[in-house]
Length: 488
Image 1 (cartoon, rainbow, N blue to C red):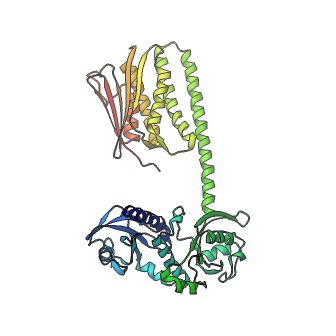
Image 2: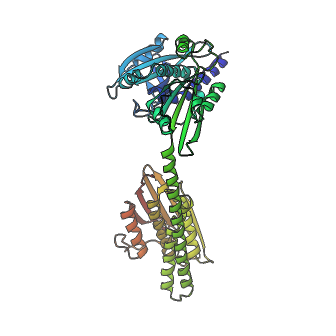
Image 3: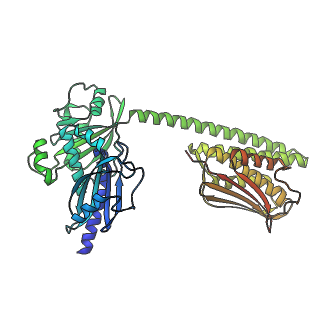
């Protein structure tokens, strides 16, 4: 029996959690679901912050412990095993808050949790100015949340302050429209007062949607294109049925007979997504154009690299051949970034993937077929914005070239390792080769090769980081560290 009660209690709490978001939005309140830890402490099991207004809390309280100082009314309600309606001041801001605390009972009638519904005094006063039928409907929603009857709203999109509200009775007669809902229908050409009319008067599909939700007692959310596809609405229908404690008052208000087993009213929440859709389409078009630009730039750079390869095959001078090979890999490194950006238009690139491709390109261009050089890339996936990824691609290319030309040189065997490390907001990039050490006269502040000059400029100017080259017990290690920019 205890296991059944525990399972039933857990199921009830899960249902309540699923209905908290829509309850917070409609009541314009913050909701906290808490469970006791001991007589002087409760833990926050779930929290819902309204999307329709600013939340009372700057962050999440989930999994935090509240004490007598943080939640005196909640602890009082827990100790006295009863509902409590009080007022308090927020510790963070001192703002006055209206607090309703409801006990939640499990299948064995033991109190298992508390739901605290907290509303700023400003929002409470505004709510009192709304129509009485809507105020009672909000109370209805709170009671349904407590019973777990709103679990089906878990997939609902958030309700914003610019969304319209329509309340109907069970016969789908309009009892209340918010000012925003009135304006939305006027855009469709309905200029008259719609209160008292049936939803079937509207050629919007609202009536069919509400009838389905009421018949199934199931929340429904659907998109609809209206007025010859000019408008795109997202509508949420929430069927309501009265809790016993409010049966008489609500039934008289909604002109219903006392049959509580049937849905008694419906809330229709209307979001006009027309402008959002227009912007989304514009963004998709721009993204497609940008991807096409990246694709063409990549093709052009690869064509240039191909011409340099042709020139290299006709070159007999070793120094000129080296310069052509280096120029080819640099161009291909930039082309690689454009290739990644052309694939999905992403603004964030995976540095590990970029490094692996650059190493492969260097092997194809710079490593002799008979040489046995082992390349490896180690480390986690690190996402960087495209500008940083481009600089890193060039840095990796130059350091890999440097390792091959000065570390491996004419050896038949060798090893080059590239390691990526992410710590906090910093990124470390290491390139190690097992070749000859740096000469004693080496001075990084005055690099003699063009490759190291490029690396130093990119690291210090573009990446805002630092560069080190140092001898190891075996080989040479180049280390680049830089702060990671946020990905937009």
